[in-house]
Image (tube, rainbow, N blue to C red):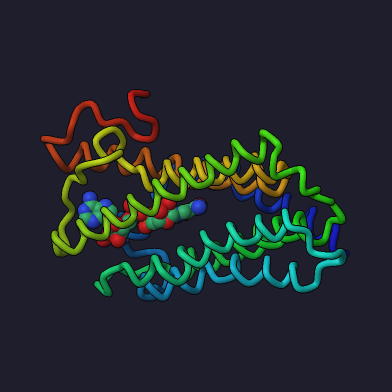
Length: 252
Ligand code: NDP
């Protein structure tokens, strides 16, 4: 039963990734600067972020509570860094937003909740229910160390970028400005690049199919959006810096 749910979750995540990747190159996800009508009822953006990210916090915690083997230090550590990210995304990031007029379609929230439930379960299953033993020696494995470095570099990059964008939003009212400084000098959406790098790190440091599925989905979701942002800035600002790229500095 647990294993079937795990297979179903993985299939769903890889399936979502394929669909979302193709779809998002043609249609920009309808929130923030792409907010528009025709997507059904909406709720305030802050509420949306809290509601849709919550399953990622709670589902993996439930897997930990109902684990079928004793809690090793490696799964515990992996669980804690997962929660550092999701506590930030669910309970800190939404309160950094101005309580402005931005809305979020309920349809997108429902999709994100299904995704976060499947993803929380797949990763929770890998850590706590699969019977896989991460020995303490894993802390010294090169895959763990490289993945951990990528995870925290990505985390710092996206949190710093989120913070810079929030500051910009506060200073520019409802308008958009060209973000300046740091990685914004090289790429249009370092928040997305950081997030993609972080979850690639997670795939490496957990060395698991669940981690890989999450990294693949994140790239499928954020790469097209980063390309849309880049194009949007170029269309809206005639003085947009020429050397700035979409996702990877100096590339493209
Ligand atoms: P955006 O960059 O679209 O917006 C982030 C915030 O910054 C919004 O409040 C936005 O305001 C504001 N902002 C952005 N650009 C400007 C600008 N030029 N001038 C003024 N204000 C600006 O990011 P998302 O909302 O899409 O994502 C937020 C975070 O969530 C990111 O860190 C991202 O990596 C993560 N995320 C992760 C996903 C995953 O699959 N793992 C999926 C989606 C997001 P406004 O709302 O008015 O546009």
